[in-house]
Length: 274
Image (tube, rainbow, N blue to C red; front, side):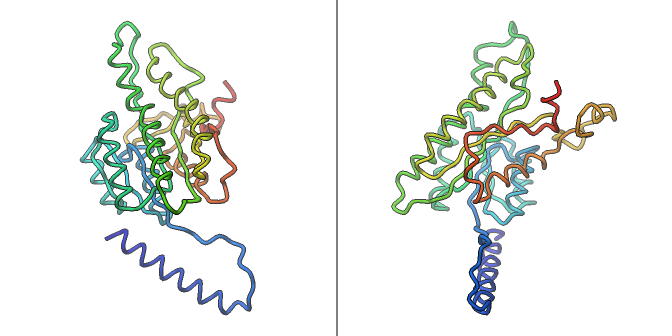
């Protein structure tokens, strides 16, 4: 219902703009017309992912997201008017099936935001190979899976889509690794490297690929932060999920197609003074 309502309002908006243009004495319009984009977000039920889902929906886009947390996922979908898929993205077949369903329903995807990640740390002597593999299967491998499927789908289209964005969430902590974070470091470092390669590989389909490295982000309202926690930040506060969502929106603006293969650190300046 939310999608149909939004599409109807968009059509009404376009009709008004057309009517206005006819009475503008033939003056050429220079500002771009907003287009509804088809957006897919991984791990969008909570935290940064939820803020991204909300921001893109409020900007007038059709949004779908997946998450393992069915309760939070359904609640987020209901509140934002988006589509939720209960998917464990470490399950390759489940993730591919989810994306294929969106291709069948929507015809294509314009924006993919790979937000999922695991930040569990443990001493290397207590971290099994299976633990390491599990982190990579959630934080790194899905970036390749979603990008690969998007490229395969775009290649099959009779009429090319001249717009595309892939945004991967990395981490500002990656250059400042610490003991016990081997899986996290490998996955987030891999996201940054993979982003550079994907920017080249997906260019033939008019898709830009960038990554965003969040710093200290307060992802839940119940997190108890002390005044000194904010004071330690050069910007005077810790980050919010909405800070990351706004950068995602900026990268997805149609005119920002020259930003490609970049990793953008959003941490209030913390990394640069360390």
